[in-house]
Amino acid sequence: MAAFESFGKLLVLVGTFILLLGVSLMFWTKIPFIGNLPADIFIQKGSFRFFFPVATCLVISALLTFLINILPRLLGK
Image 1 (cartoon, rainbow, N blue to C red):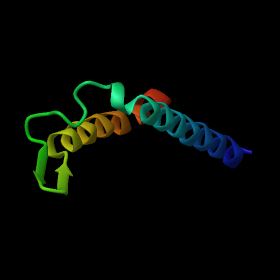
Image 2: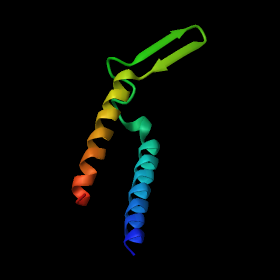
Image 3: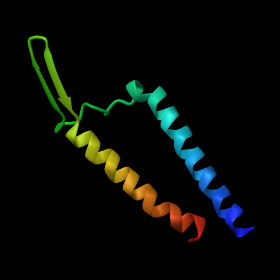
Image 4: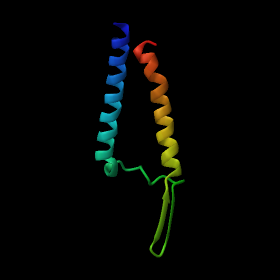
């Protein structure tokens, strides 16, 4: 029975992650700093456009790293 309990917790975590990802995608354009940080690269020459959000990727990576490291402590593992 312990296997079902841990599998249930995993399903809840995955479901929560998918829910948060869906909500963030719905409101992605309304978040003011996403894609507009100083180190984000945007090059436009004629009809060619290149956009690489370096600083935005770093901020999102830091937030996800923090959340992934804090979740096991909150769940008691």
